[in-house]
Image (tube, rainbow, N blue to C red; front, top):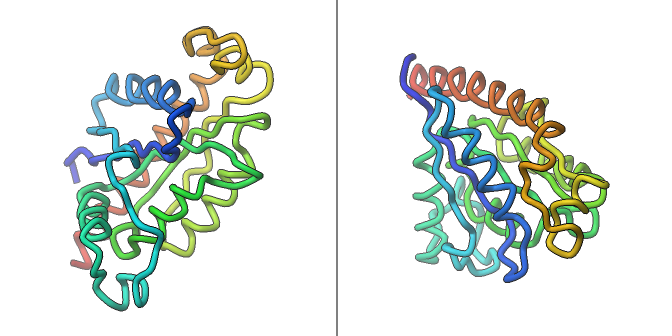
Length: 197
């Protein structure tokens, strides 16, 4: 299959003071510099989802909420995902968890990777995301990108607020590996989904 996968770069925080835009824009630049994927930003701020309150997952029963349906249609357009993951209390944001819960079958058999940030680079949140991804029948890349410790404090607005390019040498290898794996899995799952459609 020679079709380039469509990848959503999902910004998983909706806070007014979020840091997520900085790593999201940097990763978008890295992804768009490649010739093997098409990437679009999907900002959860643009999807005012209610808390999940459907009868069941849309795997079992069609959703009724118009925003949930619009979200499912958005997710369904993509072949893979890059999640920008803030770590809140050792886990992902409530907004991201709710967005994952609002869709089910549109995530199935698609790969994802992640950019985590925070004191330990969002590692605990990404591990939670991986567990959720398994239940949604997704494939996680082994490689993910983490902005933590002194690198995080260097670029965080309440720290040094330096441009992310100041830490690029330390994060570019993991970002490249994550994108390489994402494309491989996207091609593999696209082929498999087409064969069983």
